[in-house]
Image 1 (cartoon, one colour):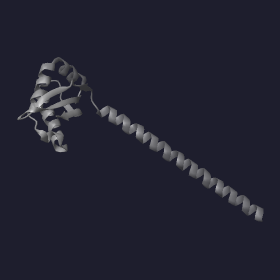
Image 2: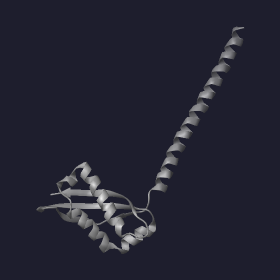
Image 3: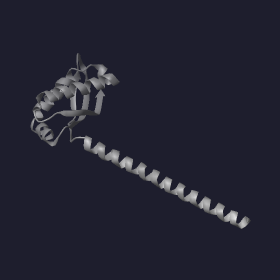
Image 4: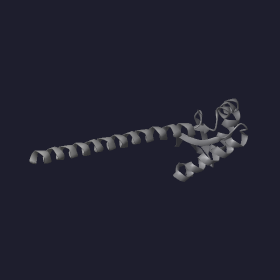
Length: 143
């Protein structure tokens, strides 16, 4: 009788162990698939990017203080990327005008957000084949 109880207990424990293993495998599978799915969605959402050259401009009202800045512009499609490459003079002018209007406030978190928004607005004003979605600040130094 004790042997039968022991066999039954062994079968029950083995069944529970199998269920735990299957549940764990399913959880890990879902976790890995969710991460790869999120990465794919992120890659689909992100548009083409174009990196600018480094710009140097005087701070507004300060002849002996200047900004050194470099940006990456995320665009909506490849046509906009090509348009920006063709309109380099307009792009450089827009970036320089925005930078020259900046004060020391540009070094604060709010100032950087305002800088990004100003660049976005000024550059999108002359684009015809799409728009800039986001401006990434790669370098921003004031002296």
